[in-house]
Image 1 (cartoon, rainbow, N blue to C red):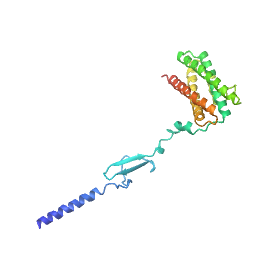
Image 2 (cartoon, rainbow, N blue to C red):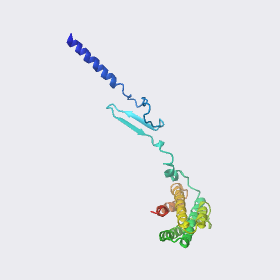
Image 3 (cartoon, helix red, strand yellow):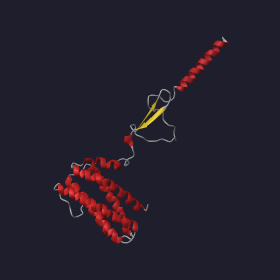
Image 4 (cartoon, rainbow, N blue to C red):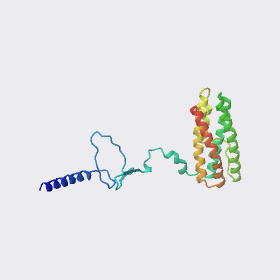
Length: 225
């Protein structure tokens, strides 16, 4: 009888332990428990994460890529989704941007007293003069009109640089060089990827490495690095 009572007590204890273990969070991938008052919580949309529990007790949490913080992917993907311009519109914008680079840099050689800025300006004049001539040859070969005056955003950049004098000139010139190159790179990326004219598309693709190098150089000068 005593042996039977001991076996019964041991069985009841085992059942209690098993019940306690099965009270842990379910294994169907949901989290049903409510955190205690005062505990740190985080807010997340249900679609953002998914937690699964394998048979061996390990858990895996995955996060949907579409829930990235706002603004982290828009800029990186802007050129990929930006439609290419019509050939004449691309020529107009590219020529205006190129003329701004040359004319603003010629002004920098007159007004800047900083050797590094003057060196950058000379590089802009040389590289963009060559690109402007190449664009002109391609455009005229297709019967497209090449503008002779700056228009659009490049004209606004030029007005800002022309208005800067003295110690403020270098900073203004470099800031607008950065902005103008960012705008031009987005336009050239769209043309290189989606342009309808193969020759303009090839011109954009060929020019992009130089534009990216200019942007990095301009950013360094603008920030003092």
